[in-house]
Image (tube, rainbow, N blue to C red; front, side):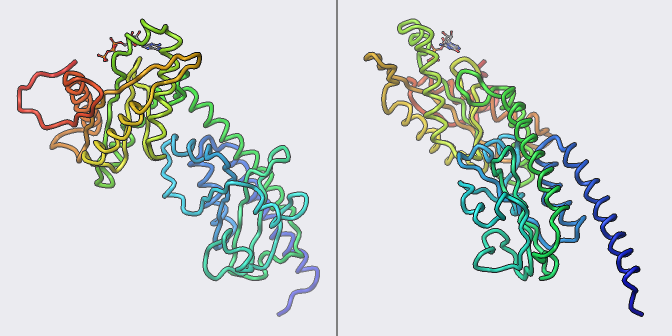
Amino acid sequence: MSSTPFEQLLENARHNEQVMSKLQALEMALISAGDFPQLLGLLLDDIQSEFALDSVHLHWVDPQGEVQALLHGGGLDLDDYPRLHFIHSPFPLTHLLNPGLRTRLSPFTPGLHRDWLPDDGMGSLALLPLVRQGHLLGCLVLGSRDPQRFDPDLSTDFLDRLAAIAGVCLENVYHHEQIKRLGLTDALTGVHNRRYFDQRLDEEVLRAQRQGSCLGGLFLDIDFFKRINDTWGHPAGDAVLQEVARRVKNMLRITDSLARYGGEEFAVLLAQTDLEQAARVAERIRAAVAAGPVCLGGGLDIPVTLSIGASCLHGLLPQETPGEAARRLLHEADSALYRAKENGRNQVMCHTAEPAGAPDHG
Ligand SMILES: Nc1nc2c(ncn2[C@@H]2O[C@H](COP(=O)(O)OP(=O)(O)OP(=O)(O)O)[C@@H](O)[C@H]2O)c(=O)[nH]1
């Protein structure tokens, strides 16, 4: 039995009301999202399930890789988010979107849209620009197998509103995470501080245990740093610390964690790295620091070297807790560093299993 125009109108009104109440619930959740995992879960998973979509992708404009570094620094494994993408520039997006950066509905055209919605069998899509103060932060792409679902003639009021809220929330969470990170950053060198490292170490030990992978650890200590301070003054010492941190960081992957652990001591965690690989990374770092003096201008060139201790966690010992394993990794790297100092400095030493009863350093 076909419905009357009035019944159809009523049905449409009911449908719109349902969409509106789902949208409101989603908006409330987005506004309350306090960190990246929550926000990404809402944008990528909840939107897809709540609105019965076949796919959702988020493209985030990240010219300097700052967003990725922040996500990674927060302990997020980007491999867990295959529908999150980063683009270096907003320009490829701007010509896809509607003028005025409003939501665009369109039939799926492989040549035009495959990079933005790389799933098979898509029929139509909605491109929601995420904008803050006129800046394009990224784009949320909603995909449906149904070619009619995102017909260009349909109204985009609901989606424009969702895009506006999502843009604000994306920026808020980004700033919130940045502030959190500042409390975990060493003010002098800009690398992480010890508090961050200790938190990260616990997370990485658990991750290595879960994945059955090795976790490498390095302790790095600037040689005769007191002499640098005493000879050239404390500000010169500070500049040396900054330059050493920069050189070390340049030798690491985005998945590695570098922290200033104490005065002139740095610590590094190397994810999925065995002892041999850790020793190779350590040697690269040592060579990069020793390669040339730190030039402070006015003819002030300060030669710097590092001693490095390397160790590796290969699973937990029987009865060992993850916390104990974390401490063992640090202790072993620290003992190896001590031997590197004892042996003449400017070198890398790896932890070797010590005979029972060997004296501890520290
Ligand atoms: N400029 C500067 N110096 C610092 C800072 N933190 C610690 N130090 C100095 O780092 C020096 C560390 O000296 P030591 O622990 O004796 O070690 P070292 O001279 O590097 O000798 P080895 O480690 O045995 O090669 C001390 O003089 C501290 O005052 C800092 O933030 N800035």
